[in-house]
Length: 73
Image 1: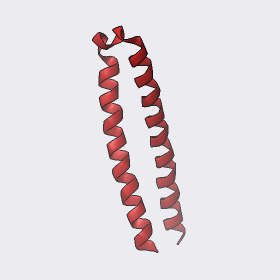
Image 2: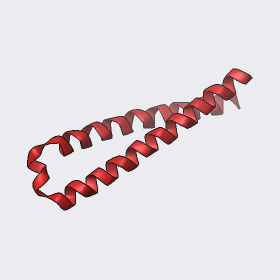
Image 3: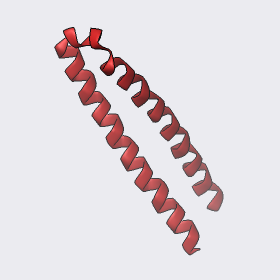
Image 4: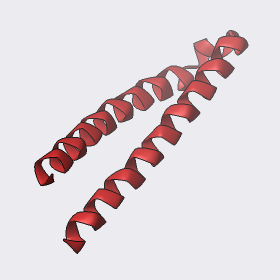
């Protein structure tokens, strides 16, 4: 069971890294003044970015819960 938890934690950490990279790229695009002309696309990407940030927060809570559970064992 501990090995299974370890695998889940590794997958979450890998996903965190990927999501952080995604947010970084989205921020670069959103910060580019040339992209402001397409307001519809800009707003859509901003909403998508907010969803990715929310997923990052959720994953962080899961990782913290895994750490707490492992410390109590």
